[in-house]
Image 1 (cartoon, rainbow, N blue to C red):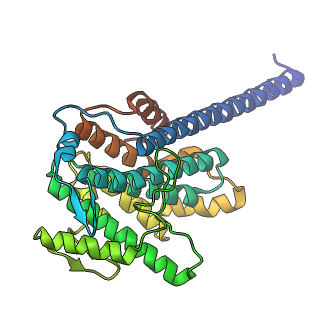
Image 2: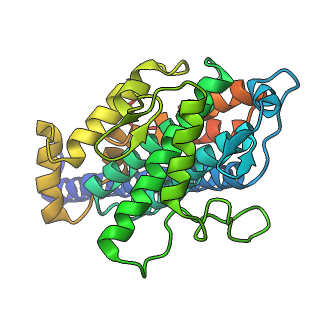
Image 3: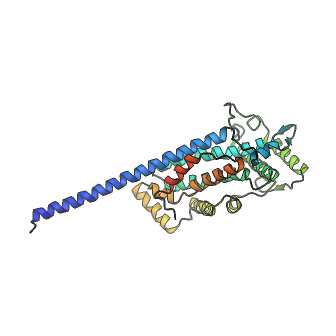
Length: 320
C-alpha cells in the first residue's frame, strides 16, 4: 500500500512535471516568435535592397519591354517610362520594408494585437500598390497609367499636407537615390502643382481620360479592394487579408478577437500566435509582390528568405 507521504510526493512530482511542460512550452513559443521576427527582419532588409538597387531582368521580360518604351514628356523634361514605374513602385516597396521592421518589433514585444494588425494592413497595402505598378499581365501603357495615377495621388497628398501644416514642413515625397543624395527630380525643389499639371497634359495628349476625384485626379481607377480581387498572382486570401485587417483597424472586431482584446488589457500581452492569426496581410502582401516581381523581371528575388519567412509564419499561426 502507498502511504500518505508517498501520495504527497507523487502529487508534487506531477505538479513539477506540469510546470516543467508549461515552461518548455513557453520557451518554445518564444523561440518560434523570435525566429519569425528574425525572418521578418530579413524580408525587410531584402525589400530595402529591392527598393534601392537595380533589378536583374530577363531579356524577354516585361521589365525589358518597359525599358524600350518611349520617354514620357512632362513639361520641359522627359523621363523614361521604366524609371517612372520603378520609382513609384520603389516608394511602396520601401514603405513595406519599413512597416515589416515595425511588425517584427511588435512580434517580439507581444504587447499590442491591434498595433500589429494595423501594421500588417499597411504592409499588405504597400505591397499591393507596388504589385499593381509592375503587373506583367497588362501592357506598358496600362502600367504607366497606373504609375502616373499613383504619382498624381502622391503629389496631391503632399499639397494637402503642406496646406494643413504650413510652409515649414519638408516634402514628404523626397527619397534618397542610389548615391545617397536627395532626388530633386521628385523631391523638395519641385512644384507639385506644376508636376500635376504636366502629368494631366501628357495624359490628355495621349488620349487618356483624366477624371477629377475628391482627393486627386486619376487616369485609371485604382483601389485596394479592386486590386485585391483582380491581380493575377492572387490565391484567394488577399481579399480576406485586406478586409479582416481593415475591419479590425476600424473597431469592427470578431467576437473571439474582441475577447482577446479585452483580456489583453488585464494580461498586458498579445501572444505572437494571435498576432500571426490576425495579421495575414503581413504574409499575403510580400507573397503577392515577390510572385509578381518574378514574372515581371523573369528573375526570382528573395526566394530563400521568403520560403523561410512563410514556413515560420504558418508554424503555429493557424493556417487552414
